[in-house]
Image 1 (spheres, rainbow, N blue to C red):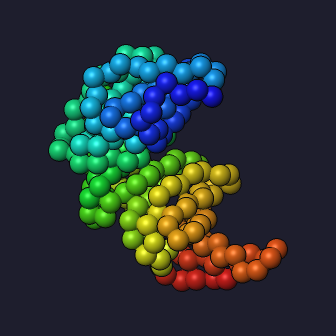
Image 2: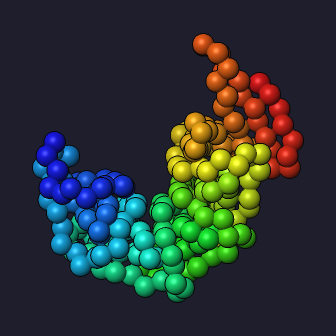
Length: 219
């Protein structure tokens, strides 16, 4: 397909019959069918890293603590954080909340995409992504950081026993999240257990499960 921009596009979502992609220099492009795209003028200068849709609203996050929201993908409004956010890299929605994560362990929550509250992550490790499924939020980040929460307010640190940066988490099914990161890292996370997938040889996979208390089991 022909793109209407040369800026890098880093995040995308679909909602209300519209594809929305975001990227560098505050770029936002939309499409009703994935083939025909339009650049939306929004007055945002910061790069945008991710975007989600829920409850009739698109919400995008990015550098310098940028959060902007739109109900139609065309008209975007800058939202104000309760603290000076730095780089926000990930956003998801679930349980009636939008949840955004970023550098220095920052976590912000909002019931509507407009009014935001800073939450205590319990650390200052940068977080790159957050996902929701089966009643759990899972945030991942630098140095193998995995944070788990059922309400996005109280967070518990997982112990996967790795130091690789974790860049993305996605809910699969049956309570299982798949997490990927640097050096080919793949984790299976089924709160409250964490599982590492190690490919051993052709047609052979070993699952090493690590509990939050540090105990392990190999299947």
